[in-house]
Amino acid sequence: MNVQYAKEVIELPAGPGGKAETLLMRLIRAGHYVDAPCGGKGTCGRCRVRFVSEAPQPTANERRLLTAEERSSGVRMACEVCGAEACSLQLPVSREQKIDVLVTADAADGENTGQTAGAIPGERDCAAMHNREGAAKIWGHSGKQRCGAAVDIGTTTLAATLYDLTERKRIAAASSVNHQRAYGADVLSRIQAANEGAAEELRLSICRDIDALLAGLVADAGIPDDAVEELVIVGNTTMCHLLRGLSCAGLGAAPFTPEDLSLWEGSDAELALSDRWSVSVTILPGISAFVGADIVAGIYALEMDRKKNALLLDIGTNGEMAAGGADGFLVTSAAAGPVFEGGNISCGVAGVPGAVTSLVLERDPAAIGGIRTVELSTIAGETPIGLCGTGIIDAVGEAVRLGLIDENGTFEEPWFTDGMPVAEGRFRFRQEDVRQVQMGKAAIRAGIETLLAEYGGGDPEEILIAGGFGCRMDEEQTIRIGLFPEQFRGHITMIGNSALAGAQRYLLDDRTAAKQRLASITGRAQELSLAMHPKFNELYLDEMFFDTDR
Image (cartoon, helix red, strand yellow):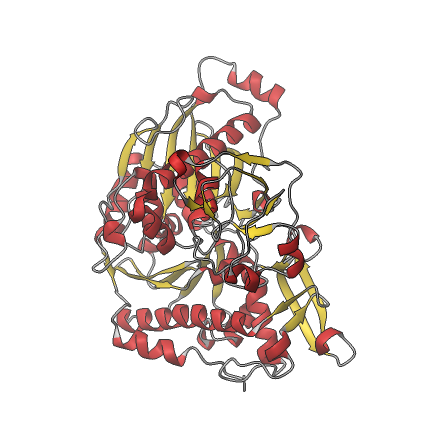
């Protein structure tokens, strides 16, 4: 892994009272962000730090995951270092501050609902409607203008938009990484962390992220802080629980009982946001422990409750899905893990500049490792640094197409031993990476098949894929690896960030009617539990395989 370290040296003081804890936790408590997708379990090797002097002896795990050159230069894994001694460190230069997040532009006002908007990269790369001088003149006229913000709290990223509520126009948009990633890339890691005593740290982390987004929005729109009167928030059930400070105990074990799924209305003070704001806050309702306000918001924005038979898929660490229409919904979620967001993959990265989004390979004995990269696209057109979710799908799809792996997902030699070279050998896709994809795609596919069979409405008339993953994915590759069934071919619509679109729409819709529709959606939604479903478990094993004759 090619890691660059910041020039700044962090002086970490000794722990209080000689208390020993992992260096990862000490850094988090001191306000330093360290990416730790595995939640500090020592499996991902991402929480690298470099000791300026007196590096501790490497552990067996560090000898396995770090190169000899890294170890000799003082690089260690923050989750492996325990102790309370003062130390001087350099942290990796984080590319995740430039993470590419999809912000839906046009669905909120009821027109062109489902239209995909372009991604707005960067934490503060906002699309402001006015320059600051023009905005100052506009906002200076006859009283305060009314503005509202919508925020989608994703497990990996946050996206936000700012609206002029009078003109019903979007005036700014912003995005950022969800810094709770320091506690793990998936919701289960964060539930565990919260239940083990980190709930308040997790809550403060997401509050700081929301504060930063709001600050960026008002600065780039050139409006005063008090112009923002309303804030509408959506997210999965775990994210909403952590934000509100609700116990996650019921989310971590069967029967998976949330504390509260209802629509919540309160103030910024009740959420402990910065005192610079004075806004009323609404968190949209959820359906179950693992089908949250993000899916409800998507159904609401896309008007699925007024359709006949549609299927909504939001594929991330927790693949949420809803089948139905005007007669009600059957909803479920499949734990795919972080693989489709670049997690648990040796060359996986989040959607940052340089992340490979698509690729085409061919066999070439003269090329590095016998594989030549014919076509390759990266975010922002930068030099490839790794594979994000869609690039991972393409890598497996190309391996299947070229016959490099068999139906069991096993690479032929030399790729079984050495990995499949990508981007002319800049990094390699390895056997253990294929296994991660197999588990993720089997969970999603088995969930889809089980949901549609139980719903009993036949093939859906519309198949709606939400999120940034859907907007870049290659439909052919998803069918080739078995993520989606053959009958989906030609019927898939990429809809962008439907969760944010729902929050935006709530900002602008008649409030009484909006609440009635949301209550109708959640009231007519029935959850299908996959955990002990015999069909799901049978299909999951079947879908681990690849159809190499396709």
